[in-house]
Length: 155
Image (cartoon, rainbow, N blue to C red):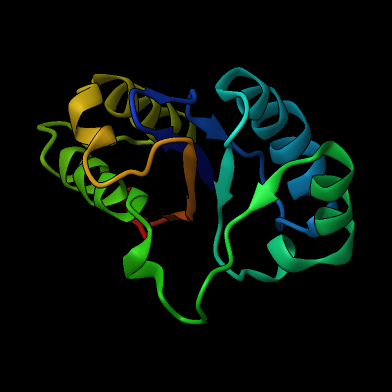
């Protein structure tokens, strides 16, 4: 799984999450605390976190953390991922990975390729459709299927 944040004129580094399920505690400890909190501080007043209604986002432990840190989160309509501007970025990344002449052969190669693609996307692309002071958040699950020829799918 990977996490990235975008806003008008800026973006976070792409964060690759280690194996295992993403729980509310992991989301707080691996995303909100080390990545979102400093980004919110850098953006300053008017920062608004955009995240969907995934279970770990709306969990009490995460809501409490955001409240304690003074981070406002946008109200999000149910079942509406198409409203999140970062979905366009995930599509660009998926296409770029699939168009490579040599497909990633390991999970680490895929993670490295995703980070490279993320960094190569022009800032104008990540800013289009984003709202000032809003970090668009989304995840993409990276699943490796072990066959005679590794196949990596981005969801």
